[in-house]
Image (tube, rainbow, N blue to C red; front, side):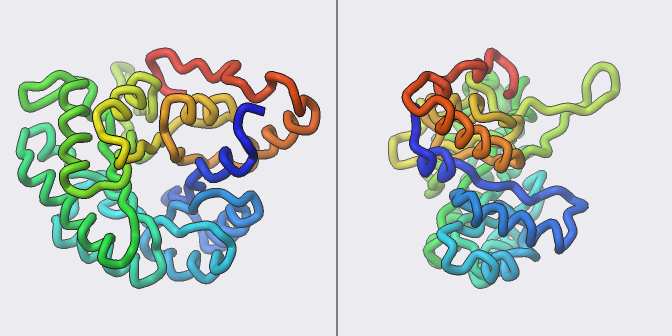
Length: 264
């Protein structure tokens, strides 16, 4: 196999963020995360304390989203959310930038917004993933092309102390010409660009649209160390199936994980 089970499982942040998620579903998701040995659960702030209780001693971190999903909270609100989440047991923070400020070219605001969360989290020993929400950046902004804007934001996040830069929230829906809403999430192009835009100190997280094992392998191939996922059980069950049936074969190679220009 191309990667060990632990390498694959510890790439996954098991996402428990759906707006309708019940307490029972949250608890089921935490137990699933522990059973499969993933890196973390990614949850809403109110649920951190309960998740921390369920996952204590299980080797799975609790990650809380901040300013989620649109990044429009004030900086002080984001800082305070971070403080509360860390006090409740969060070891990782996934914050959303203020996208409107980024598109306006207010770089100082965006950087200070990220820095405030990073400084608060780091005081508590937690690490920070900063969500750019790339689906909202496809037309560029502030006089920059889409790629230039993403590159600038990655560099800004590194200066502000981010531990990861992250592609998407999974909820960055954009209205299409036919009136429907859709998002791409992580793309091969964006992961490559983001990995090249920061130093080795900063990691990259993919989120949105990674639904099968080959897509997860591709994420790792492109240099991302984490991937947000809801199809955790299906992907890791597939890994075990391949490991059993093809222990020395090519079954875990990239295969159908080709991404092209869209999401995967």
